[in-house]
Image (cartoon, rainbow, N blue to C red; front, side, top):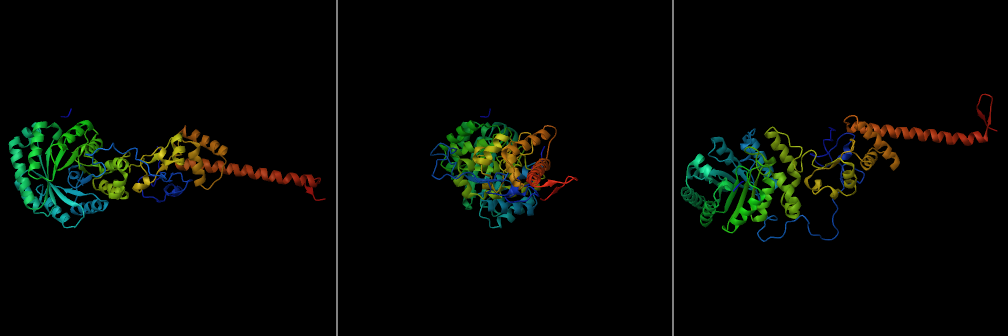
Length: 467
């Protein structure tokens, strides 16, 4: 089926109001003179239709999706991941507070410690349902139900290449075993999902026959998995739409990012009728990972803002991403949606002017919704005088527009020679302002001296004596 200038640390990636020495104002909100442009996106005075909402479709679940957070399962498969029990508990609690619907854990059959960690997290009393991911095998299912989880995510490879080289079973065996495991898990009063592995390279007829059988057995969800990241959004939409007409249960989706389509694929799946999406913090997982929690929520905050902002504590996103990034020894990518260090940074002069007037001109997301701040970059040769004017006000200085334009030219001139830092630009601004003050003082002294000369007489030594 498959075919150069340092930005203040508080600009993006720190909570609102964080200080940064002389540039602390870049973290303040709600002032028109703030170079960080922290004026909120305009709020409409009359109700308006969201122009970015999907076209209405009775099968779409864009405004009612659920997240299965898999950092503690898929994320453990990330190359540099090692989560001890304490770290797992910390991550699980944070995700639960954030508002995810499910937390998926590594199979207790993977190792003895995995089993103990699973039991420990199940005892935390979290609001999120705890799931564990197991092979479609009765031994794994029996072990999993004893850990105290709320449900099992059962999986088996269905593509011809996996059936030949992974487990060696035919479709008849897969269907028989799947129904047996599903019936067993349901008999224990637990939730159960059955998923094919490598769905998009599986035979469509086999796939639909299998899903119809497990749906008849009473599975709570069926899963579609793009295990190698080969699917395109159109392929995803077509398969989910077809499957929606075959099964009555919920549909879970799992997209790898080998070809860069995981977020788009997840969104298209929801449009087509899928109900659940597997995500992980920063998208960590096997190889290039899966749909990232933050990346998907960036998309959903635009398409379904009311549902997304109400359901999830979006201001916690950076805290959670920092926690996981530290645990797996990586940095948050510069272009990471929402929390990347330049996600809300504006540099070009035309952009800066518009952003300072109305943030919606060049932002589809409001950083304050995520506890973030924007930063208008003014220390470069691309800067415009509007950005410099705002910086002048931040520094507590006063200049006319023409004077601001003159000092902007000086900043650009230096920036044409070498990269400049904020301190460089501020030095130019302050130096120019001091020059203006000196000029003003000289003019004032000259103006004061002139009337005195007119009203006095000059002595031989050149002094003016009063008459």
